[in-house]
Length: 163
Ligand code: PNS
Image (cartoon, rainbow, N blue to C red; front, side, top):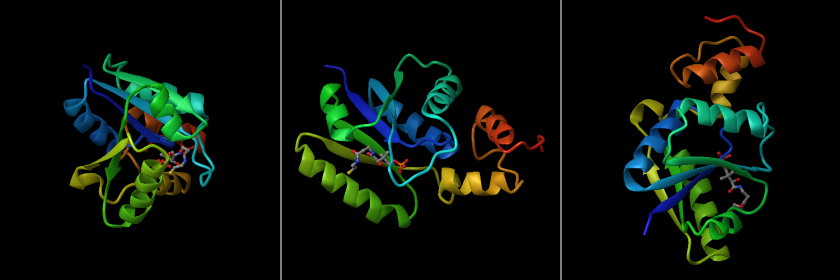
């Protein structure tokens, strides 16, 4: 039976930290669904379509990956896809409480679903889409923290010239 996992997130935009987690997850699962999921706490810069297209492009349309979106509960999506494993990346300690809460809430909603945490490469420990957007918006150089195409799109969104 194929091992399918769902990697949910806002991906606004996808970063090299996300790419690192995707590469690690691809070694463990036969198929990975990258789910651009609704996070009510966050106001997004990129539309859902833009985020999905960007992810597809930077992953070179990898056949083991499917990119999808959902505005409902993660547990419902996972059940519908018969996946039962959710992948989340962990950076430093600060992620822990938020991730712990979500994992346990999701477990309460669906006892069959497991959340697997993968530790991101140490190079991405301090980065996040939020921080990258803040720096890019103010003209700081975020090259190397996001895939090149994401960098170009950030520059365009903020009307900045390439650095
Ligand atoms: O990249 P993010 O913003 O940290 O990802 C958070 C995300 C999108 C995974 C989370 O908000 C989520 O699962 N949203 C879907 C709606 C849902 O199921 N909410 C309850 C989570 S316990």
